[in-house]
Image (tube, rainbow, N blue to C red; front, side, top):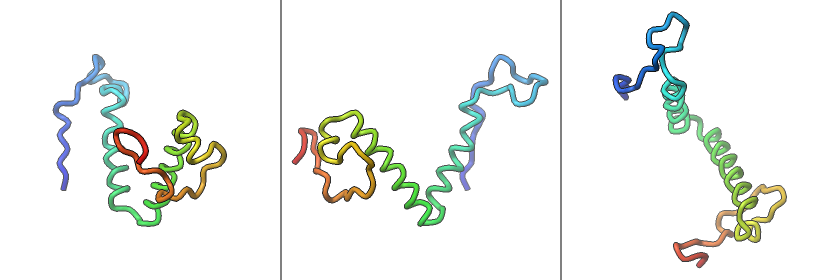
Length: 97
């Protein structure tokens, strides 16, 4: 089991305020949720993970097509659907191979 150590999380100036949940900044509050997200990705249903990965890849391709002429030429700028990874150019540090 993973042990979480919150002893180094900085408290805000309002520490121990009587208002609910105002004693810690938002990012540390989000930390446990981020861990749960990772656990769900790593141990969740395979089909759900594949769908999530495909969705993230679509977002990446759309980003690349919008901001790079190089990628726009290769994957188009319309609806990006079933792009085969095998058909995309192999890249090196020095450009496409």
